[in-house]
Image 1 (tube, rainbow, N blue to C red):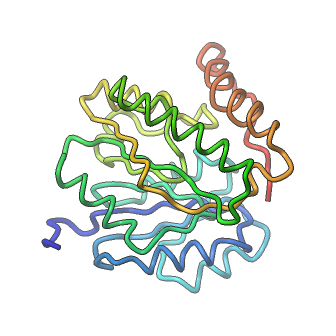
Image 2 (cartoon, rainbow, N blue to C red; image 1 turned 90 degrees about the horizontal axis):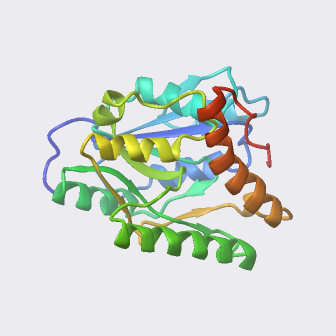
Length: 247
């Protein structure tokens, strides 16, 4: 691999709220990459955890931050302000990445420097059929949208790469929103960035989002929190609330 012209090339940002059960597995995989260790930094944002998350984080060479205001976007924004990389990577604390994950991300970014956002799907660690069905449908829709519209309509928030300076130039996160994905895609495109969905850029995740709550996941998490919530906030300037804690 050729030498990268800036250190670090990636800033991996991992929000963590009461993640003592899964954060160690996540960080172990992140630091087990077939990629130069001096070309990426790892920022863990402890989002007001009350368990042993902070103790586990200390085992790894991460940049450890604390964000007292609970909320995924709040935590990611705190990490963004500290990040130095050419690209930021948002990763969920219950995600496990394969050893060639950063290499797979690096290659298309080098081929097309106009890439502003690159995202890929989840695969469940325990492979429950309900999660895989939802994930397959979501992945298929994103893939078709990417081919027809030349852009995904939404991205996987815990497996996404964004060009940092361009993201800052367009205003970064809108902290009014619980999730700001549609707005971010639209703003990046308006600024001339290109958006891509890669079905092969896959990471493993826990089944907790759908385990025992499939219908709730579809209607509350996707329809309400992703779609209706953002529209409501845009029209009223108010926030309906935050994600349900499902640990």
